[in-house]
Length: 355
Image (cartoon, rainbow, N blue to C red; front, side):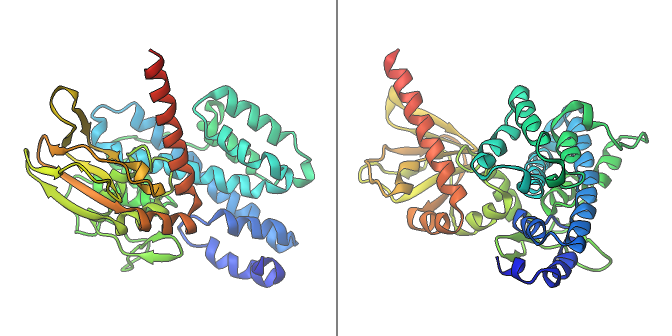
């Protein structure tokens, strides 16, 4: 709102931000859309063109990873690329916001990120049918490139597609998380901080929230482990950096007791590596990494916990409910994902009871 009141002066500030290598936030794009002056529209069109190049690169890399043997080496890069593609969809929708009814915005966003091709196609057709004067130049083409096979090959290089070439493309990504994953996938030893340089002699910080946060390789790998759990799967990396900084880590050897059982805990248990046994005897369940247990504690409910032991050497993270609730106030996405997860658990429990 403050940026919009400053008109073209704000557009000049945003020009500097959009000129950086990293992704802009959807809010910055919405500000440009609302300013709507010729300089702001020109800046938006230039940025959308830049995004289309990066979107084509992202789609190319995802296709290459899907067809490459030995995919475990590329699993982190694959995760970061998928998150980046979802972020580009958000930015494209922000650019198209004048042509989308506010009441439909959330539903269209979910449909465009759906795995169902028909849902994506229906949402895309609804957006593309909007008033031409209100469609940001290039934004519809950007969505087509990201979401549909017929647009995925635009602008691709016909040169060699070996691992080194693919890593070079990933390191050129606008996403600092993709660049970090590419650095980790390099076959040669890397420094403890895996982030490549965006310019000669300058470190490329990984942003989280409103602040730049320096993350070493271990912290980055922890964020990736958290992203692989059901609760945090769809939460943006920027928020995950704050979650990763808020957990308490504990290592256990095979046979160690993790939770004695009894009184309810106020922590979410996140299994980063290893495997745990939950319960006693034949009724015990196994939890393999990456996974979570005790999500109900995050909403303030204290229910009795079973005995939990390490089946193999394991690393467990504990996240306090009070810390999670504080994060939810700043990042409602966390509360939404928790609600979805608990709803799925209730649905699955009901289906099991019916059987």
